[in-house]
Amino acid sequence: MPPFKLRPITDSKNFSLDASGVAGFFGGEEAITAMATVHLYRGRRWLGWYNSPGSYTIAKDFGRISKSRLWGGLFPGPNHDPVVAFKLDVKTGPKYVASRSGTVMQQTGHFAYLLTQGMDDLTLVPLPATRITTNSRIFVVAVPEITYENLPLQTMSRHHAFIASFPILVSFSTCIFSALSADWYCFAMILLGIISSGVTCFIIGSGALGIETVKKPAEGSPPGDGILLTQNGVIILKGKEKDVNAITKGKFSLQLKGAPEYTVVGLCSLLLEVQFLLQLLLIPQGSLFGQIMFLTSVVASWAYNSFLASLDKEKLQWKLFCDTIRLRPTAMLGFEASTRTSMAAFACFVLCEDLPRPLKGIEPMKFLLEFLPNETLVWQRWREQVVAQVEKEEGEASIFQPGNVDMSGLSSGEQKLLTTLLQDADDAYKGYTETHDRRQSLTIAEKP
Image 1 (tube, rainbow, N blue to C red):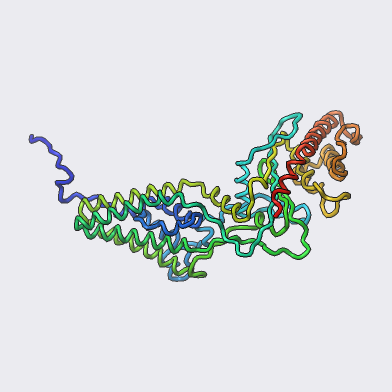
Image 2 (cartoon, rainbow, N blue to C red; image 1 turned 135 degrees about the horizontal axis):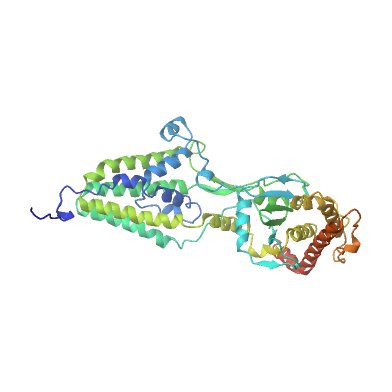
């Protein structure tokens, strides 16, 4: 039996990588996620000139932004609004309850969601604690006055431009090497990939990013102070109605060229589909060297897309929003209460801070019911005592001693429970008085 011999790949005239089909689908999700960052970086629209993989997947996804029968036939499926397609408005925020206007929103907007995520970076100040059950976080945010006239969104720095040069250089280099080796099929397909990706990135990246919110509330509207009820705490917002609206009702807006049908976006998607079909037909006709060059450009572009896809886009959006409305870290404070009852009492004290007594236009009981809706007699007595403390003048002594509370009608066990809850409220009041200067410096620092 003659020995079996392996022939080198380079000696095989019939060997073909046939990477054309892979290029259309491989790295599609990474490419879509990378394209979603095009509006979050300064100059990012100019950095798409590389042979990006996943052209078919990108075309199908972004083609649904276009709105007409023609584009609906080419790219079937539900139409996407641009802000949804680019993941700029896909999350809902927590429940919001206004302290002065009576507004209650079961769901808030994308910016409120980003605010809840941004609070994770704050250092928490522990409040006095006699006992510990469930740690609850309390954040106080002094919303600055926002000038909506000529409100350009501040984009990010250009430090990533150096990284973006890698796939661009690789794509152009492989294109040139293919031409030098007289492989015009692979040369043309790499060049087509560079052009289609670059044009699409430029057209989509030229969209105008802005903030959409209720900019002019009704005349005479009270301050927009209120609370966002999160899963494990509360965020207290303080500021004018129009400024707080940016957080509770605001979202990104994206105006692409060719609205409302977005024909230009449809043409870009069609170009990407044509690229996929031509690569499918012509890349197998190229030489082995040309196919290696093509595959090298695709892999380098995929690596860069994966880098962009790995970035925390929600954090980038939050930084973008904060820079735009000038919401600085010094305008935010975080506290940690050891029990939910302490959190509720502390939040109630802060909401009514600096308001003239007797209180008018605000109902502390409503907020306590939002936190702790228990309707037993013990909780009713506790809430009544907290409201009585809130309605006293600032700086007066605590009234959370058991002797100051009506214990009639309560069993011995209920009296013990009420005494424990009163101690939680007393801890909250101590924390409220001890952190007074911190909160005052916060609001003073952010006055425009």
